[in-house]
Image 1: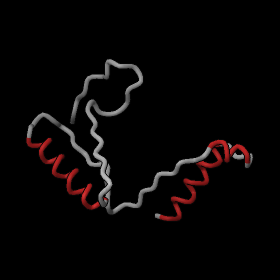
Image 2: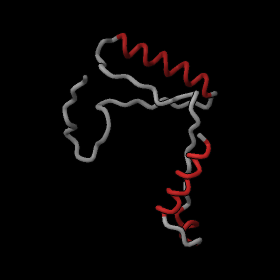
Image 3: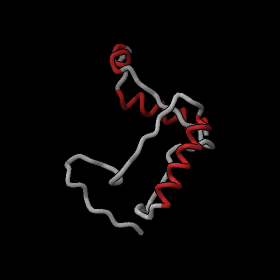
Image 4: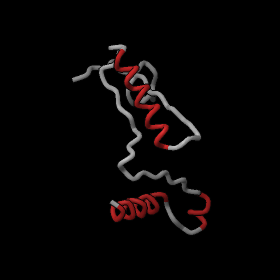
Length: 92
């Protein structure tokens, strides 16, 4: 169990501290570096919960929808969202 104080800033979501590591190298190299970072953070004893969002064994994709083009085709964002959910269910 972990307890956290609510954020004093309105509109913030998530855990109190989050890091983003970016690179132009391969995902495998990013995974190695992120694991080293997590081990170092864990060794400090200052963090009760540490997680790596990079999952090499799970398919992931980021889709950037052009809202203007979708509107030209008469699509609403809810339609596009449902279509992408149906497609992702077929992949897994």
